Length: 402
Image (cartoon, rainbow, N blue to C red; front, side, top):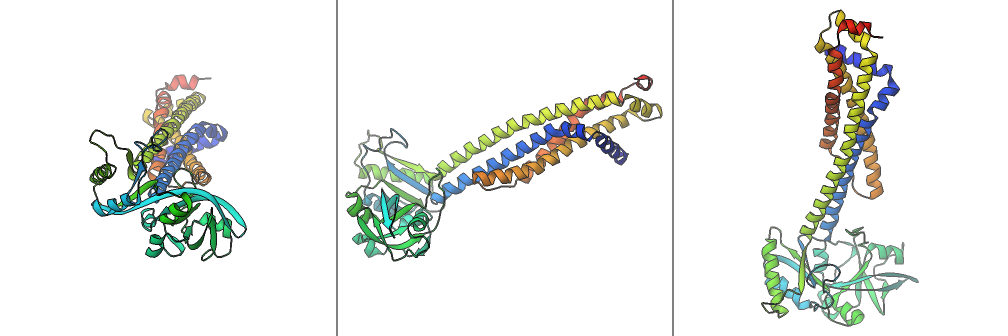
């Protein structure tokens, strides 16, 4: 009986192909919109998590000022010193490495080409804390770090812009007023969390930067990497206490520095992205309800058009539940077909948008399956009323219908 009913439904749909297509269009748009929004949103969430984790593992960033952003008071707060980073690394438990970081910017010249970039000074710990790798070359030696030698590492962007296809190792690079030897090329990290090019930088010993470029001993911030499984709250509290003592703050004074936990930042950004994804998915799901109303409307028209056929079936012995099942299955088949077409369209749209937005394509089978089941359920809900109306027709009145 089920097979015959299904064949009757397919035959009815095939008789009015254009009308059937227009009927399921709402379901197609709804399913494809929901799946596309959720898939692209999941890809964006994964991209944010990947970019934040690329900053470093269990990373804490200590900066002057009471808070991040404009008006933080960072310019009036005293800067850090190299000794602050050394004290954190040696006196705080749960800290695997601490690297002072000073920054400047300037014009680089090599091979007759010039390029403006960021200049960062720190120690070799800066590489491990920031998950940097060396594509070519070596790290700084202890002698180079102590003496502030004119050596530097360059990012992939600078290698490409200034050296092109020629080898960069051992070459001389002019950084503002000094000339340094390129001893390494950093592995590429690509775009950062805030759209910046992470490979557009020159890295040199912090003493080289302070003595020869900035002319002072200021440290802009300190990067701290915690050991795996360490208590972040305890480490932050110990570090805050140590820095308050070193900066000679009284008990009544507020901290003139702030500690940023990148894991918290990643969780916050990921949470925001997930909420936006759910919101967009919910808005897109409204179109599924509109599609369901369209199916109910067309099914009511179909019942009216086929009143004589229904009367004839009932007159020759068909049961009410058989008629109800026939129209209900027809509505479910229509909605399910719309769901399948929507899934195919959503897959293509998700792949295209992911490539366009430069986020990974994350296939989520549960979202696809749930959208398909939901579309079929819409067929049941919105097809039940027309099917019940058909099943309750009086055979005599139905046969007299003009």
